[in-house]
Amino acid sequence: MSDFLEFLEAESGQPISRCFQCKKCSGGCPVSSYSDVKAHQVVRMAQLGRQDQLLGSTKIWYCTGCKTCHARCPNGIDISAILDVIKGQILNSQQLPAVDLPAFHQSFLASVKRHGRVYELGMVAGYKWRVKKWTEDKELGIRMFFKGKLSLLPHRISGRQQVGKIFELQKKGGRLNG
Amino acid sequence: MAERIGYYPGCSLHTSAREYDLSSRAVLKALGMDCCEIPDWNCCGASSAHAAGHALTYALPLRNLIMAEGVGEDLLVPCAACYSLLRSTEVFLAINSGEARKLQADVESVMGKAYNQKVKVVHPLDILTRSRMLSKIKDKISNPLKGLKLAPYYGCLLVRPEIIAFDNTEQPQKMDILLRELGAEVVRWSYKTECCGGGLGITQGSAAAPLVNRLVTEAKKAGANAIVTACPLCQANLEGRQSQEMPVFYFTELVGLALGLPESKKWFASHLVDTSEALAQVEGGLSGGR
Image (cartoon, rainbow over all chains, first blue to last red; front, side):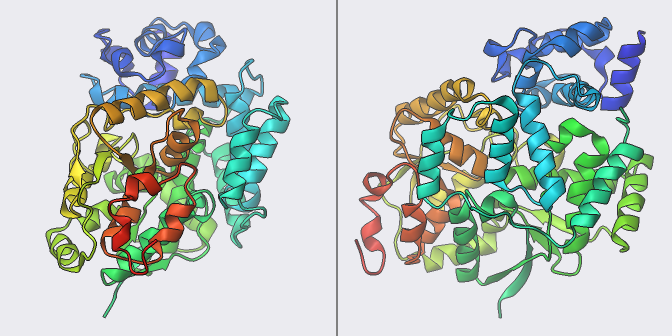
């Protein structure tokens, strides 16, 4: 068993070794057609210890976390949980791949850490600033604004310090101490 | 006397999904339940925290469960993503693994407050489909949704992961049962639990759009006038990214309409897709009319 497989099984809690490649996961995966590494291939690469290939894939970030693969897997493997471990490693290493999704997660978590809740407008602005795509979806944003679907100011909670300490727990005791 | 129930709105229900918040509270109030928002709740982290690590995934929801203890025995969570995560956390703690015990102790020390695992996370669909509640709804319907053909759309997180045990993961029925009770016709379709790509909505709109349009096309093929959801992310994604004109309702809005609540007009006005055509047959029954 490779070290990488051992690490992934322990961190994700998923019985990766059980997979016999029936491919039901990829059959039901909503992003199969966008992905260079399909769901069943993620598991196979993990079994073979192909760390570089998995960490280097820009398309694993397309996983929406819908968990259809998990619901249908005859071996009970949650592939999104395996990908979360890989994504966590990448986010912690700060060596982000050339894809916009990690920047979204960073903006989202920064917003929660700062306000205790997601400030949608600020979070989206933070994301756009990170990826330098200011005009994308401008019209949708304007439509939402005029329907009263975006609040201009953040809702801040008074337990922000507690939330900050919870983020620290992840760094200190979390299993993904990167 | 109104029955008190803890209420966790989550971030979206205070901003982009206000109509879901307002309609949930109004409908439950009309049915004799008083939603008490839990004090100083925080974002549960759904969307992103799972990618940052295990501890954060469960620690953020746990702070809310601790805040909810004492407010009411049940904690009502309308947002499908928040529901899935808070309920998963409840189950994770109940399994009582070494990891779960450590996490609970850590968060308890941050909060300076013990947690007795008394909170039961429930979804409004759980409550509204209890037999006592269904008969109450039946008695109170003043504006049955006759002629409305609806595609119930559960999406991902209301039914998955399996451990939350909300309903069958492939063929859930709770929303179907409720909508039929309101007098609407529920269409049969195969896309009830297919992902709409909402998680890609902000970052990869071009990847989400085909997933959205497939769902809308299939709902139309099945004969539906509208899609019904329980998820703010699905609702925004489905209405915002479709190239057709099919409204996407929260099920609570339709319960409100069937109960003849006059404020339901305001909820429908905040949709990105015009709802008047789909509702033309039934909206006249509201007091005051159009």
